Length: 145
Image (cartoon, rainbow, N blue to C red; front, side, top):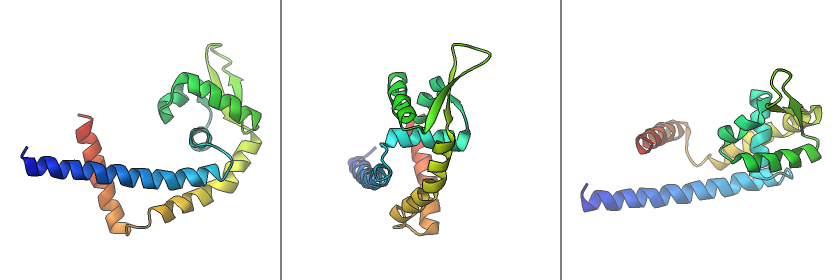
């Protein structure tokens, strides 16, 4: 690569990092307005959309450590949004399950959260959003290869 390409890559990295930070700051503000932190919300959202999950798999799916999962699940249990359910076939496995209160909590909030994300990302029109999705996918696939 040439120096000009290196400089352009560095500029892209800075712009991408700042955009990510700005977007995440606003999304986290929205999540915290519901009384949860982003990790707690991610666990509830995963269970809401994917159903019961083994505790061991939650960390893999939302990219947090198993020790953190225990802490987060404990907090969400205290808030009565989820409960632990042992697997009837394998005692080594414990599932996280949304309570009825947890389902209702997400029913009442997820639509608003989704609209808030749409507003945060509304700086791009539909075509620009589709192009950004494709370009970021391409960048991510290249970076991980």
